[in-house]
Image 1 (cartoon, rainbow, N blue to C red):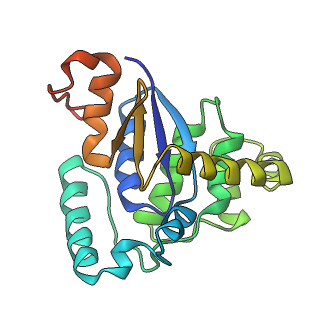
Image 2: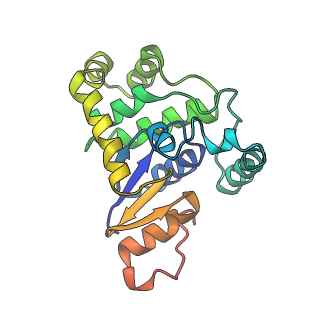
Length: 204
């Protein structure tokens, strides 16, 4: 299995599904955190389309309940959406190439979309990092440095140049796949680009 690039935002509900699936199944992932907000702003939107379009929002929350039931993923509709999660995105940049990156991402997503708790404070992130046996103060100091802040802005600009318009987005062998429902296709294309029409279920 070749690796896939996984572009995500911790405030994205469909990214939640994909994070939980790739971590659970040990998929080889290159994590690419970025900010969805500036992407939406470039389209003239001041919020998530699930908020701006009532009908789409109503459908999305029902769809999330169905999808989480399908994959056996815990779910609670967040009382705040989209929830700010800039700090954990910066921590994911610090975690680049580290074995704890995936589990950290999983725990942040569970905090947002299962426990319905904030994910932006240093206290919340310290709790997760300490539970993982990591040097929380050192990691948070690196995540809040000017250099890491600049990296997240640069990564978001890179998302724009690569024509990413939503999350989750995956790249396999240079080909873009958008949405949790395209994760299986991205994985298949990563391993067998000539047979992309065959669907490989990662949850079986």
